[in-house]
Amino acid sequence: MLRTVAAYNGGPSVLLKTVAQLGEDCDSLLLIESLPAQETRNYVERVAAAYWQYRRMFGGETKTLDALATGQKLADFRLDDGILASSLTYSLAGN
Image (cartoon, helix red, strand yellow):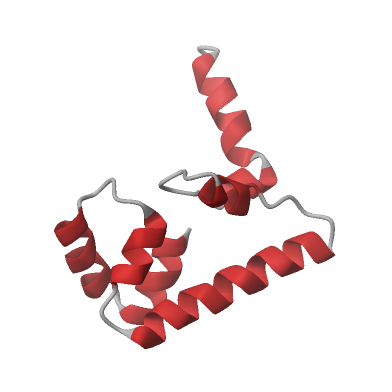
């Protein structure tokens, strides 16, 4: 989730260079703080905060926030709508 927002603002090449330096499976929060442009770091923070605030304001779940707060390295937007969980259940069941 955060990587998508960072690539949108700072450009995909900047994000890819930072990922190459830190490793593909690096923590998303560390990745954002390691981006070279302060503008991009601030943008990601503002967009993510607004996203979670609006989700809560309108009764939506914030599983991506919970995932990042508990140390999960990546947080997929589909977590918030239960899409990812139902997809995993479907594929694990062998359907």
